[in-house]
Length: 317
Image (cartoon, rainbow, N blue to C red):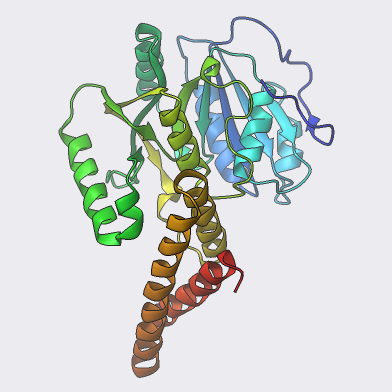
């Protein structure tokens, strides 16, 4: 396990970090998400689980009252990172403070349920070869999110292929009844055996976005076995966010992922394809916005303005 950097602060120190017998460490990140953290704590306060567990919350220097609230929660491990250090790095800080058989990585904006947690734990206990396990991840209305990793370079070149592949995978999930093996899992919730990685879980070069993609790809290359259990599900409320403030981070991380796993040539070619696609859409929505005055079209144009700048920055233009 990694060591905690000197500039981080652990509160709730009355809880032993090395006490034996902990089955699952639940690790999440807080960044100005006080209400979501309160909801998460309320779930654990209200449920009885057949395994031992610990909740570890890493706060990335929130300024919404999260720090003050978390300091009062003596029955969790609260880590103050001291800065907005990124999602993957924050999760790694939480894992460094854990000592358990399994690590559950979860976003703060998930709605947990007892059945899913117990089913996954029982499955992993009964199947020692399973390194990573996830339930179905859905939106609030029950639609499946794209949480299954598929190793496909073609999907990065062609958006239509990516959309078709995603749709087929979602159909497969809804039709499956029994746990089944996949290349890897992505996103808001999964449980991993702590003995399948030695140092950092997430690659800390990824500040935000694609850190789960890189992790799934790396674990697949290392032959870590991943499963999905479609009979249970967890809701992820934040899965449809598309704020333009996050666009730069997304395309920077996408380029970094492509370089790491497919090489510079493919990364540059896909970046050029993205640039041409975004330029065309920027002109299209700019024209539609001018003609109609629609705020929807204006927002689309602004999105692609930022996207164009992001992909240009990847190649130093």
